[in-house]
Amino acid sequence: STRWNNENLETLNKIVTNFKDMHPNLEMTKKLVQKIELLNRTSIGSKISNIKMPNQTDKLIALDSIKGTYTLIDFWASWCPPCRAESALLNNLYKDYNSNGFEIYGISLDSNKERWLKALKTDNRTWVNVSTVEGFKTPAAIEYGITSLPTNYIIDKEGKIIARNLHGEKLRDFIKKIYK
Image (cartoon, rainbow, N blue to C red; front, side, top):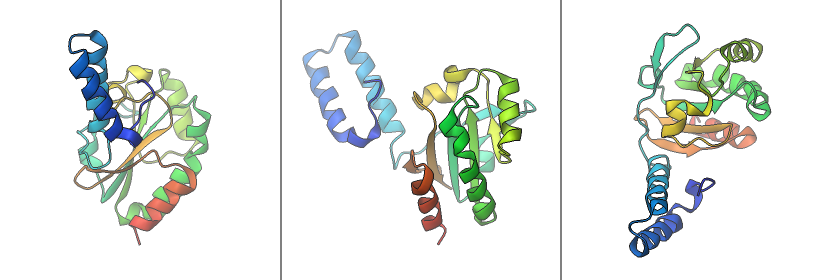
C-alpha cells in the first residue's frame, strides 16, 4: 500500500472496505484504513489544509497567506535531480503567470539547510520556499503522504485540489489552459 495512489481510489476503497469487514481487528487493517483516508484527503476535489512552515529566514509562512487564483504546492529537495531539472519550467511558469495570480509554495524535504539554501539560489527559486529541514519527516510531508519527489498539487483559491503530480509539458499545458 505504500505505493498506492489516487488513480484507482474507488477500487482501493472497495478493497480496504472488504478487507476491513473480513479482518476488523488486524493492525494491517488499521494501516490500510489510514492510507485510504490519506488518499481521500489528497485526491482531486478535496480541500487542502493550511500549511504553515518556516522560510529561509525562519519566518513562518502560511499557505493561506500567499494563495493565488491558482497555487502550485511543490514538494522537492536539493538532492533530487528531477526536482532540480523542473526548476527552469517553474521559473518560466512563475514569470509568465504570477501577475495573473499564479503562486508557488515550494516545500523542501531537505535535511541540510545549507544545501537547500544553495539550491534556492542556484535554481533561482524566487517564489515562497519553506522547509523544516527534516527530510521526509517534515510534518507536511507526513500529512500528505509524500513518499517520492517531486510531488505537487495545484489548488484553486478555495484550496481545492484541481490537479496533482503534473510535470514537464503536462504541467505547462495545464497552467496555460487554466489561464486562457
